[in-house]
Every structure is written in C-alpha cells, then in structure tokens.
Image (cartoon, one colour):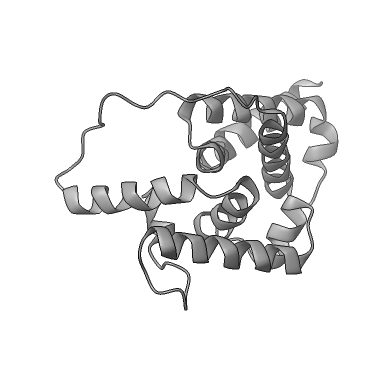
Length: 175
C-alpha cells in the first residue's frame, strides 16, 4: 500500500474504531472477544483498503464485516466454551440505580439468541434502520422484523414489562 493509503487507513481507524469496538462488545458481551473481533475486522479492511476506501460508505462496510465475523464466531463456537465472569466492579459516579438497571437490561440482552441479539443491538444501540439491519445481517426485512419482535418479547418477559412495545431503555443499557 502507498503511504497516502496507509494514512487514510490510519485516519479511518482513529475515526471509527471506538464505535466499531462498541458494536463488537455489544455483539459479544465480552471485552476481550470484542477486541479480537475488532482486530480481525481491521485486518480484513486493511487487506482490501484500496477497494474499501473507494466505497461510498466504508463505515457501513466495516460494520458489516464486523457483524459477519461475530456471526462466524457464533457458528463455530465450541459447545464447551464458557466465559469468565468479571470479578471486580468498575467504579461509577454515584448513579447506582441507573447502573443496576443498565446491568439488568444488558444481562437480559446477552441471553438472547445470536441473531435476535444482533438485530436488537443494531436497532437500539446502533440506531440502524430495518433496511440497514437487513443488509448488514444478510437477511430479509421480514426476518429482521420477526427477530426484533421475538427479541423484544423475550426482553419484556425477562424484564417483566408489558409486551406491547419494545423496552424503551434497551438503548440506554450501553450508556
């Protein structure tokens, strides 16, 4: 790669890596796995950077690569693999009630099946449209709707809320 392409890639990484990491974390629920997912995504982007740089929306393409990598991980994940629980709690700024509620919502989101979780994360955390979610996950818009509805219903049951509307505070869980 030429130096100017390297510089544009470095600029892209500086501008987009935090958001991509957040998406990776929300997709996996695990800090280290999210780091691995982000690194794999950035490597794949780097390998095709001239083509990616020429795209109209390289950020959307990067997100699609990241989600595809997460889905591939879910598919090949060993049935005996288990994650470690965090043993220490991070410090908070006195908003203990909000933290407890966000933790409760986030734990519920992590119990969703992978595709439902992906749809919920992309809808409520990334604020993507139904069409963008369908494109990112390579599924029909109707499938996105059904996964969103099933995920919202499951969250409503887990969070003991009415099932008429998706939980409004789902998007606040990552704050």
